[in-house]
Length: 85
Image 1 (cartoon, rainbow, N blue to C red):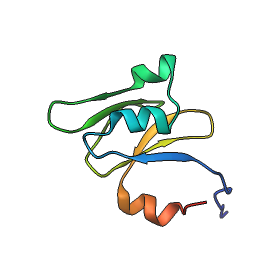
Image 2: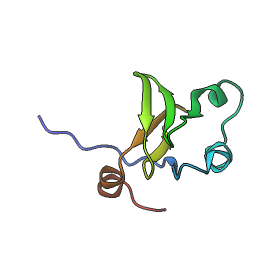
Image 3: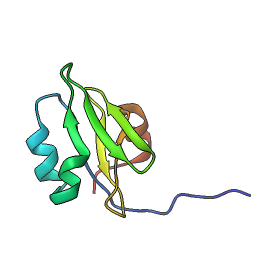
Image 4: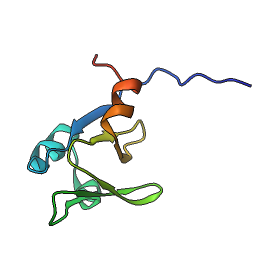
């Protein structure tokens, strides 16, 4: 069987190693979600996801999904999967 991803509007902010406030504000993170993202000493960003902790690198997109979950996405995959609305 074949399936097509349903059209869904997501919120996303690109990680640039110095824009944690933009991610918090842009994705409207509050309370428990604030504990889900924290920078590393070498410019990465740890994100607690439904699958466990993941590391975002400079340039990765941080996505807030339909259920409020957070996850990183590599720029090339993001560009092939999403378009601006």
